[in-house]
Image (cartoon, rainbow, N blue to C red; front, side, top):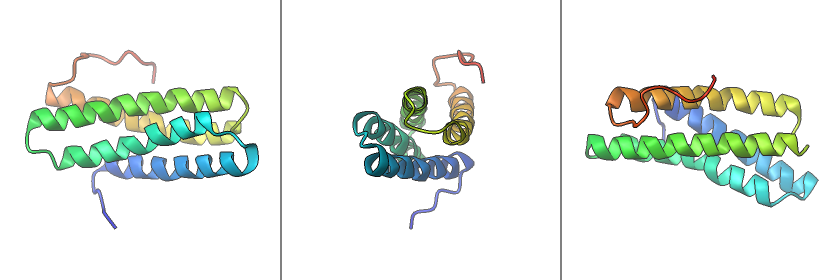
Length: 127
């Protein structure tokens, strides 16, 4: 079992596990395949890119992978919102997953900002 000791890596894995559960539930109980699959892909990609970043050989590669993880987290938020707004997940599930995702987004943005490779100087989101 691979262990990422960074807080953002731990949170990303926690979120990916929750996303897998949502996906499985959608398949079994709601017969919803499209949105939940997109949500699963972007949600699991966050941790995968963080893991790749920690094995980077350069700051540029590290920043690039963290940037991809941040974008995937933003995409996951979109799919999560869409699943909720269309009635496929409960408000409690939405709130729980959104809270984790917002934490991940904040951490990734801070990492990008601190590496001085992030393009944005300030967040454009209201967290």
